[in-house]
Length: 196
Image (cartoon, rainbow, N blue to C red; front, side, top):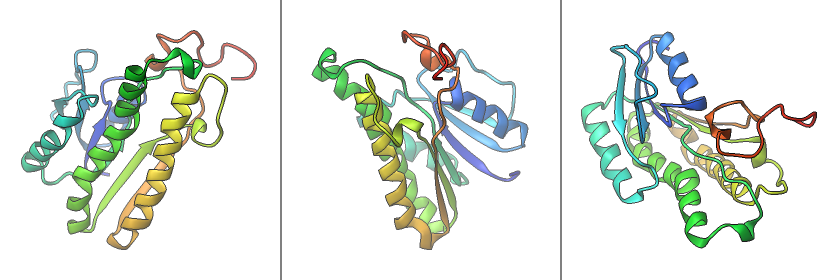
């Protein structure tokens, strides 16, 4: 893994933070994207931060272009950014639905689109998406969450087909529930009952 430079979205908490810590411990250079980097500031010369709110879709392309201009050696992407909202569909406003889909789905498409030409031209790259078991089967109170995870799964499968001849590996990881800050504002946590 040494010699790699990976862009990680959602690098300051949860699975994104754990991924960043693992990559750094393996000698990988990481550029981390997050809204707020205060809760994770490793003292590692291989870690660079970029502050970006992925809900602001208009800034993503320019920010990724700036990142690639200053770090053209980036050859991997791990899409971990996101937040959870669970409940019956009728309990969400149109604005909440749009914001949720922008952060948890559309931003991943835009970040990937902003990098994939670079990966294709260099004929090397790894793109990893954090999916969920919710990408495989819908669930009660999961209408928004399942929608974005099904979307990520379909997108990853399509990008894999589009990029295979350019030596780009595309992976989606579909974990079950993981105890992270993701669940802090929810009414349930992984392991709360026998079904988890």
